[in-house]
Image 1 (spheres, rainbow, N blue to C red):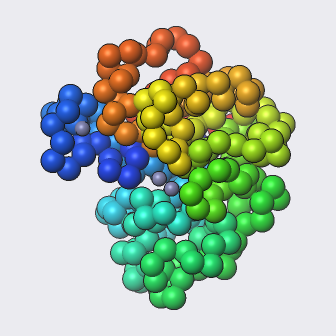
Image 2 (cartoon, protein in one colour):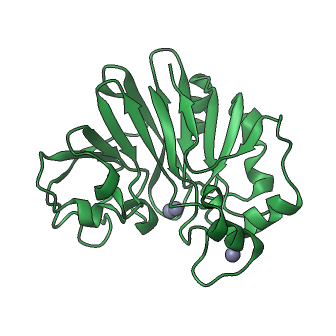
Image 3 (cartoon, helix red, strand yellow):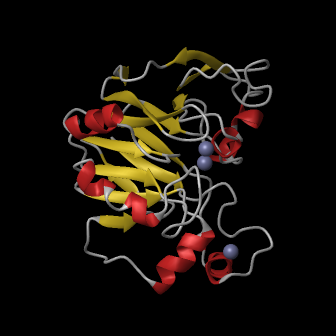
Length: 251
Ligand SMILES: [Zn+2]
Ligand SMILES: [Zn+2]
Ligand SMILES: [Zn+2]
């Protein structure tokens, strides 16, 4: 089983529309530096789960025959925008797992189409999604009800924490207990900047606090990418900047 990051950008993405800063200009000439809306896919032997659905091109590359479900962190538009199109698909019902959020996003819950939103997950309760995959939802601080997820394979675990403005003691303890080999965490802003999301100075200490072998930064904004071009992180350190397409095995 593996997780592949299908997006590592914040809501504006990179390049930002109309912006000519260095990181946006770089992303226009080199696809490798582009950052789509923060999201991932988990590929198991029996199929694929999407982890958030902010990409609006899902219908072009997600085969309905192998799609086993969508796992949502929360109902902000940059995490669900792709569902507005997908819901009118002609296919079997697609289970959507996530936090109970009666407001959802716009009219998604009123007009779900082929999406089945009845699969709400209870905080801190492990849920087996298929033979080799289970998830533990851990509430994290953000401007809306938001889950991070401990994603467990047969032997290994990683934690996916986007979007995040901090982690309370109970969720932090649950993540530590899972001994994650990697934590993928929201880091939208350069040191000292922003709100509702972590900045670099607040994200880096989480590697030790959560007992992760590696910490990967995601949900990255162009100001942070500009900062990282001037002050790169050590390439052999335990804190790494994720890129779209990054793939991690979970045994
Ligand atoms: Zn820019
Ligand atoms: Zn959000
Ligand atoms: Zn977001």
